[in-house]
Length: 207
Image (cartoon, rainbow, N blue to C red; front, side, top):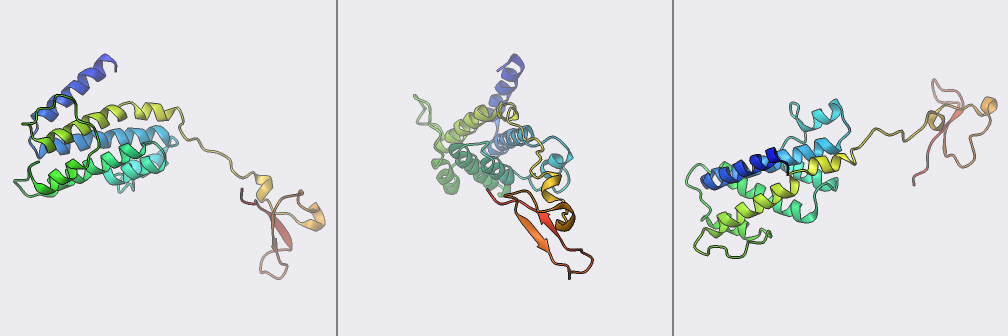
């Protein structure tokens, strides 16, 4: 990490340690969500279409859950990250939707945290709240994993590609242009159809 990123990450760690049980998962999930957004932005073709998918109005990829699955479906996060972030989201939701009084000692929260696979460090204090500690370590590891993911995936950023050439989809009249090139699939339009002359439309065969 460069100096500024180290400062920012240190502040993030300080905020996590100081947060209440309710605030901890909200802050952690928010940063992970931000890193997923950066990852998708780094991978998608640049332009307004990406913004409409990710951030504008009722963008279909504006929610935490949709970004988790989109990153996984595109191969931008691995199996472990997908599972751990999913559990972070579920724990976050429990606290976000609880009216008051929920803590990491709650049985459901403890059960969710127990399913996290991020290893605990050696020398962990057994007197500490295990569920809160496990969640914190998992969140920190995920943030570290994703910190520069957006920059990494930008190396493979998608670019608009020509899949079909004009020659492959142009109208062709056999009596004037002759038969299509050998090996090219065609769709034949019968003379009797309204508004169309007899001709052929070259197409493509699936790979």
